[in-house]
Length: 134
Length: 204
Image (cartoon, each protein chain N blue to C red):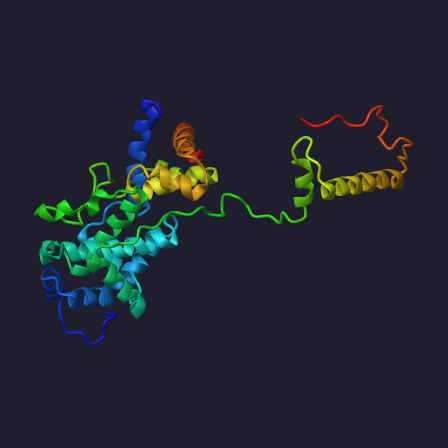
């Protein structure tokens, strides 16, 4: 980061932290904060767990886990067979994948015929079949 | 108070804990545990994970227990002292700062677990009424997800949040965290400069 950006951020971060309530609380601010919170007791098992950890000094350190927010979830079941045949290694024979590949070719040809784009060679007008992928 | 029926005052609870009486700790947890947990959730739920919030609550009581002899009524009520310890505990987790759990602090008679951690931390004080601060707050909301998460963690932690922790949460590398942070700072600086150049009446 260049010096100017660094200086800018250091100043801005302090102002922002105050605005967002992240500056260290004074005793008076902490008291106001405390008074504004709902008064509820923790469940007995949680109280016991805290007391055990605190008095033994053996605190559980939580290991952060990935969130799902960054990778929007989608149903991959519908495409996993296609991914399988696209990603097989060169020279790798697999009867199931070959059958699927043939089925996909056949479906693609039928689609072409249904759309009135019938092709006698079945290769969409190409002289040669598609080359091996790299 | 949540421990309905107990007549033991706060200074006696602190004294009991200083004497290593577990009953003092139990009273403190019963009396203030709910509100301390609520405080942590209110202030840090957006930047800490569920397990980390529980860790922060445990660390709060751990430090109140260890340093109960440092509590004085002159520095506020026991409740406000604990709130400030809780704030520090949450910030330590964001920065993965473990030195505040070190055993040798118990031999430092001046150490108070409720005191602000670093000189870099924003000192308590008046909120700025500079319109650029509000503009900046809005600009952060528009950053890409990872950049926004880094900046929010930095602000909540009062410094640079731990890159390893952020990388684990967001499924990326530490290097990517460093680069994203720099990009975010540059974007924010550029946007604030553009905002500042606009005539006051035309600012949006």
